[in-house]
Amino acid sequence: LAYSDREGHHFKMVADPRRTPIGAIIRKLSIDELPQLFNILKGEMSWVGPRPAIIPEVEKYDDWARQRLNITPGLTGLWQVSGRSNLSFEEMVKLDLYYAENWSLGLDLKILLRTIPAVISGRGAY
Image 1 (cartoon, rainbow, N blue to C red):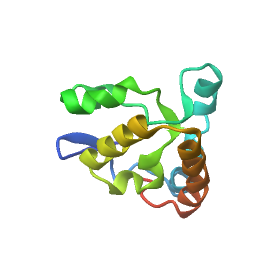
Image 2 (image 1 turned 90 degrees about the horizontal axis):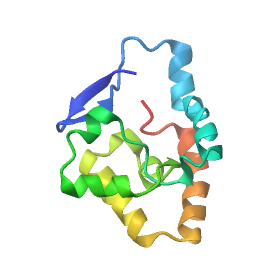
Image 3 (image 1 turned 135 degrees about the vertical axis):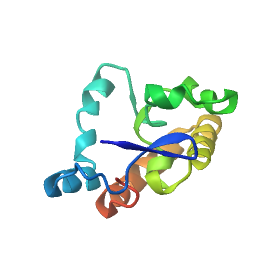
Image 4 (image 1 turned 90 degrees about the vertical axis):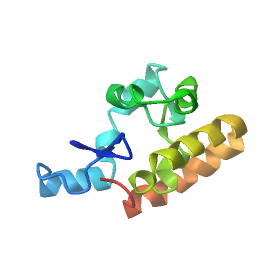
């Protein structure tokens, strides 16, 4: 997908002109995320954690935002269940750092349970 430069950071475009109707459904239901299950099986990702960062995004990170790179990326996380792309970059980093500082099995379970309605609603999925 194409990325727009919002607040100096890359975010998926809300109205990507290249997206087909079937592609919009795949994105809204997060089906395009399923290949990341292989990354989980290989130990490169976790079920819960911050979204993996893209290189053009990381190049713009300041020291505060770089802290989120110290956490194993996940398939779902606080950002995904709190509004995804409807949130600002700063809000995303705050949620990721909150997760890192407050990690617990209980928090992971809450996030996993909140993932189901977040995926079904498609809120913030572009």
